[in-house]
Amino acid sequence: MDRSDPTVRRNPVPSLLRSLMNEHLDPGYLAAAEDRDQAHTRTTRWSSGLWLALGAVLVGFVLAYAAVDAAERIPGTERERGELLTAVRDAENRAAAVEARRDELTPQVDAARTTVLAGDAEGAQVLAALREVESAAALEPVHGPGIVVTLTDPPPRPGLSDSSQRTVGDRAVVLDRDLQMVVNALWHDGAEAVAVDGVRVGPNVTIRQAGGAMLVDNRPVFSPYEVSAIGAQGPLQTGFVVSDAYLRMASVQQLYGIGFSVAQSDDIDLPAAPVRSLHEAYPAGER
Image 1 (cartoon, one colour):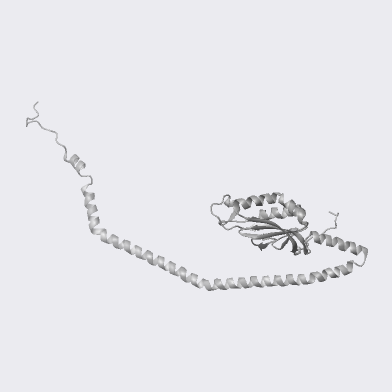
Image 2 (cartoon, helix red, strand yellow):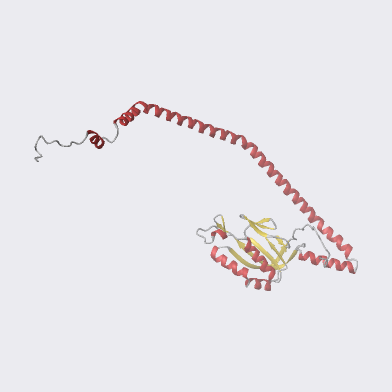
């Protein structure tokens, strides 16, 4: 069969198939999209701008209300803060007055007790026992030679290792366990009395850290921390130098730059420890 014969009928591509290949969007959809762009673009932009303006007004109103409310609260807050500071100062002044009165009456009480008890042998024995107990409880001020161990916080340094255990904020600091080890070593080496920054260490006295503050008997102390110990200087210093506390602090000094020194002193004055409230008492041997 001759393909060039005009009588031969070819199978032409249908118009629908051609339109699907050439026109990817239905004419109806195309017309609707053009109509929407031409007829609604201006309205859509106008409504979007309106909503943005309303949102801006609402945000501005909320911010203005918050600012006015904060401004109204400031005087009240400052007044309450002032009242609290005044109350704290008054309480501190009352406590200081009570302590001063206690210090004034303590020698009078001791003198009256001595006068009453020293008159006979039995009273003298009771008085000697009381003085021994008071000395053990650190209830008497003491004076004498000894040694002073000084621990000092270093300036901040970047790149410290073990930062979670040895730093507060970004600073390497002396820790409460450092002071605890030094105090315990001094007791072990024969100290008769110990104080940290002038706070006498006796029974029930704690050394602990709260945040960045060092507390001895719940009193804040600050760097440099001076641990004073009264006792025989030679044995006290020799025993401390070979103790675990000395080795620990020497290592900490090299690693973190914390100040650490030991010195002898011929004139150390330590105050009496605070008097503790007595809740229960039993004669010895009855419990």
